Image: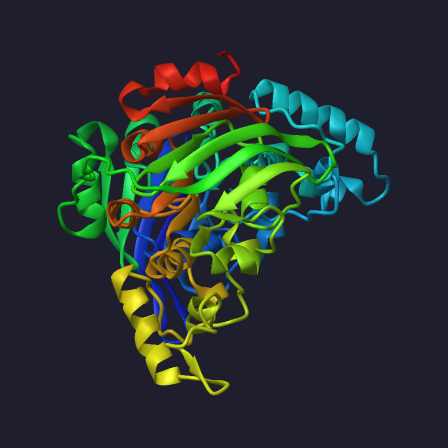
Length: 502
């Protein structure tokens, strides 16, 4: 029996003139957790998509379980025992959880026994402590629940090699611990996991080996036990030393920019999601919102930004009553919004990068006059944002959907920060970003704060919340459990509040 379950030899993948992977060799041992690390656009997802059959026109060879394979499509990959959980979910929103799980399975050709499938799925969820109601429609699930569904769906299909592409990007600390328990259990059962992540502490904690890609090429494969610290991995990834601590100036409070009074709103199922929430954010401070995903954070932000109706209560933005204003009116009140779901609310994939960067500002005098757009100025403006935020794209005319997820996030954040708002609302601003981009965006948010902006930030990253926030509001089942000063904030003080214990 071969020691390696997977060998990818001399893999090269091109998209027109762009070389995404160049002559990459990757070996993964049976029963190990193998990290794949690299900056946004380094070629990690592309390499795994070649393995999973998403791309077929590549150079090189793939050996799985000692046999040369030519994987035609994902169905073929699943059939031989390869499962992949993508960074952007491959789910059909209008179908139920269990319908998504069994969709396309060979065993269901003659008779569709959803009850038996649901029973098997529920047992799997209990086994790995990732339970989900099999009869709920996917569109009713939170982002974190959809991520869990994708993982369970791959396990349901009995994958021997499980590829997890940024699986912790949408999970809370407790959910991440459950995921790591599951990964350890799979490893102990002799199964193999490829773990794509930007989070260096996670790689150091859970992985056996790490392969680093840089600009589409193999940089190194290292044993984690031989790596001294996170800084060493970061340097391999970006080719230089990375400062992992963001400097923060003392807070200088200004007037109230956002006031929320007794706010209530419903979720998509017409059930109460936000219950009598009150708080304020002043210029010159960052208020972080902390909580387990699905406890009303999404609905709260949507009701503030005009994307969801307020059933009762009030929202004041920069002194103006903005309760139930539409999204355009809210943005016109000097508000920038980095949304939770960049694909649904932050960008249009069929438009190019430049057009996406113009979406919010196309009416401004600097970009338009006499009914015409000033494309020369717009070109310069777009190139500057891409340069400042290191958006890796062949050109600003490239379709947004063709960029990696991290680069999509960078141009959305760059567009909103460039507007220098009086109120910045940022939901998971560093989700899916490598360590260099994360630290840059965190520094830019602190710069906005230091320049007098009020910042409302939602994140499931406790380390990010504690590092950046001046105060942290904890939400549980739509209610405010408390507001903690940064000096008192820790995993120990926030954890019980996140679980509903005052």
